[in-house]
Amino acid sequence: MRHVISILMANEAGALVRVAGLFSQRGFNIETLNVGPTEDPTMSRLTLVTEGTENVIEQINRQLLKLVDVIDVLDMTGDEHLESELALIKVRRDTADQSLEALSRGYETTLISEEDGLALLRFLGSGDELNRFIGALESAGLLVELARSGAVTMTPGASVLRYRRADVLAVAGQG
Image (cartoon, rainbow, N blue to C red; front, side, top):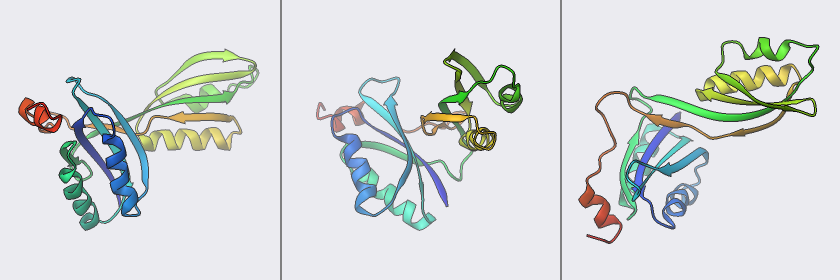
């Protein structure tokens, strides 16, 4: 089963390596991984997508919480959450052919540049939408190059990953 896991961790050198190492040691593949700073520069939010049974993912989540840099872990798979992915997509552009416009309808795409008979598109949407769009571009023979961000997620409403300034200072060795 596909699992989307959001991890709040100290923004420290080596933190990402320790999280990825935990998955590697257990023989689990990380399908996508996205990490960046949060509203607090001492913390990063890591979102990863992996496959596994409920029991295995629960065990991994418990192991993640034992890592010194990890502040909180939330498996968003069973909860209501919003998921988005960014992609840059280079496609063949034939001005006599309107198939790119037709294929792009219904997707949130923006034309960023056109050069040398190629168009560079920015896509924003869910991973499933992106997979469908990529499939349509491949079927039409238009796809040239693809770079995707991986999933970023957040729950709507008041639910947040837990953190307190004291937790962050303790993890960062400042408290």
